[in-house]
Amino acid sequence: MHEASLAQGLLHTATKAVAEYNAKHTAKPVQRIAGLHCELGLISCVELKTLTACFEMLAEGTIAEGARLTVEVAPLACHCRQCGHAFSLKKRLFVCPQCGNENIHFNGGHGLTLMALHVASEDTEHE
Ligand SMILES: [Zn+2]
Image 1 (tube, protein in one colour):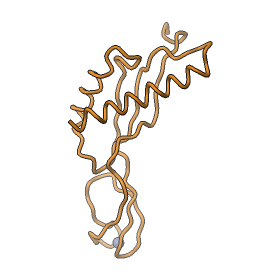
Image 2 (tube, helix red, strand yellow; image 1 turned 120 degrees about the horizontal axis):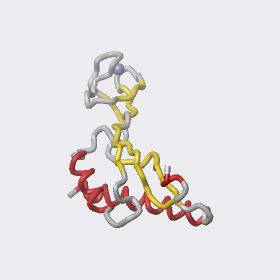
Image 3 (cartoon, protein in one colour; image 1 turned 90 degrees about the horizontal axis):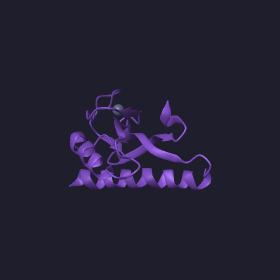
Image 4 (tube, protein in one colour; image 1 turned 45 degrees about the vertical axis):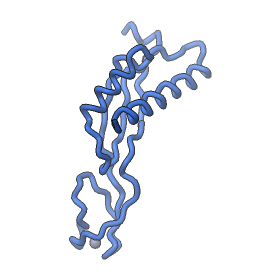
C-alpha cells in the first residue's frame, strides 16, 4: 500500500507543522487543519482516490480530521539531451517540444509534497 504510507507521511508533516506553530503561538493556537494542498510528482504511480481515502481514515481523531485534501500534479523539470532545450512537463508525454526527440533527462517526479496548509484557530472557527 504505497498510498497509505504517503498519506501517513502527509499527515505526519501536517500535524508536526501545526505542533511547531502552536509552540510559538500559544495565545492563538491552531485547533484544526481545514485543508492540505499538495503536489504530486508527474511520474508517481499514485491512485488519488486511494490516497484521499487513506488520508481520511488516518486523519480520523487527529486535528486533521475532515480536512480537505487538494492534490495537483507538479510540473516536472526536464531537459532534452539532443538539443539542450529546458522545459517542464505537465503530462506524461516525454518528447522535446523543440526538436521532437524522446531522449529526455529529468530528476525526481515521484514524490508527494505538502505545499500549503489551511488551518483554523479558535477565533476563525465561528465564522
Ligand atoms: Zn530537443
